[in-house]
Length: 83
Image 1 (cartoon, helix red, strand yellow):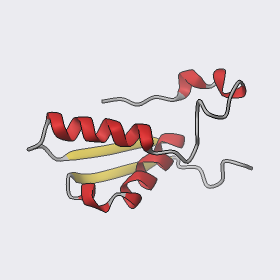
Image 2: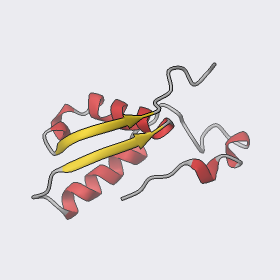
Image 3: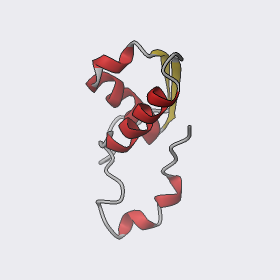
Image 4: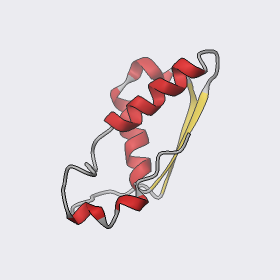
């Protein structure tokens, strides 16, 4: 599955609710859907830039799903989205 936030870039200026840079809720729903659809499979998560932040944050917050992942790759993860 692919979760891609780039297309929302122009809309970001309209409302802070469209993209919450620290939010993992949408990613969590995607992970739950994959785990229910493929319960016997293990997963590999790959995130780029803001997606890397979301992947790492989600897996850190949800230890119960970590066993379903073989690993996670964080590419070009940002350090501070404010600066």
